Image 1 (cartoon, rainbow, N blue to C red):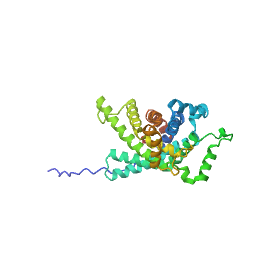
Image 2 (cartoon, rainbow, N blue to C red; image 1 turned 180 degrees about the vertical axis):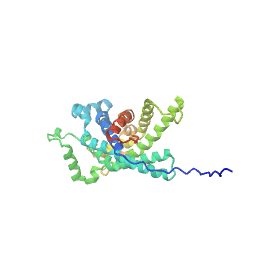
Image 3 (cartoon, rainbow, N blue to C red; image 1 turned 60 degrees about the vertical axis):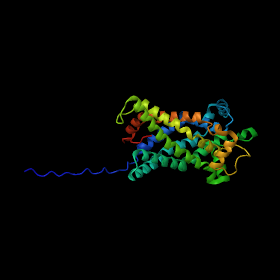
Image 4 (spheres, one colour; image 1 turned 30 degrees about the vertical axis):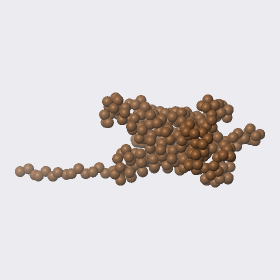
Length: 315
């Protein structure tokens, strides 16, 4: 007689937290630095200028930027604020989003819900850790009045920073950080969800199954649609710019909050005012997508050769 066969029940797969590798941080910082130093900052400056000067047309906004220093006017706030933001926000997002996604999955959430949870939590962490003061200082440099017009020497970057710190302290440096947090939270949540929705639409159109990989162009299209459509929250961005702006207006609330800033903009410029700068923001989302998706694969190969580690991050 043959020995009885023992049937072993399948054990549930143990959920393990993926390690955060140096190669992932290097890739995120490198791609973000490239994106902001090329087209990223000019689009950011255009978007911020239009949001701050809501009566300007697109052409007059470009003229205003050019008058601040020609081509270099489009790179105001790049050094050091945009570079600090670009080199650190990827690392903050990776650490926090990875932790949040892991604990969400351990609590029983689906991959989709866990991914959104990680993105939202990481976006909020980005805002309060580094993006708050970086976006504030970029906006201050872009919107401050020229001191040269009154015959005074224009303040430098660090002089402006210290002047705000002496007058308003940490709160002044982080002005508008709550609006930044709301923007980042809704950005990452909607980008993730809308990109996945676009990917499913592409699969349905091309007849590809869920297991088949999308081509590079299909990934760019899906991510570009997700990034562009996520500009629905542009009013939060306009509110953020207004809160951080240094323009003079006696009608502005003295202590600006997200709520009273919304009312101020709406009374002055209506619904259109709340969506000023949405076109360059959509362009910014498309450029970020091209950098992270199209250039991401080439960057992964280079980083793997440089560090000897397998890159696992999805930027």
